[in-house]
Image (cartoon, rainbow, N blue to C red; front, side, top):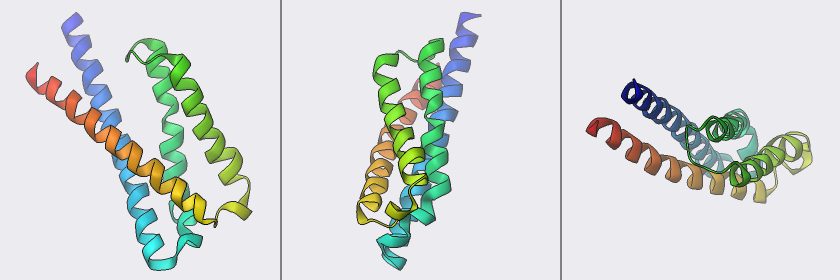
Length: 133
């Protein structure tokens, strides 16, 4: 039974990490494409919904730590996720005047590169473990 639960846990985390990786890859693609085609003023509008979804999905990382799916300490995860949610929903979403600022484009691209690269590594490791078992 423990083996089955362990396999289900790893399978769930693999699916979750792939979904997050694809979400951040979409944000990165849309940001770079829009930056190239239309300029930094239009990047936030192009990535708004997938960015909000990707950042909000990170709440699951807190739940993963709380229920013991991962060993990440909540004391480290909570402030990181909380600050990103604050930026995404309280600042970026609520203050339309800043959405076209070039630093918002920089923020979006930085987040995307960071998260997509982290998730690709984590997903590769977990997928390898599942194949071994």
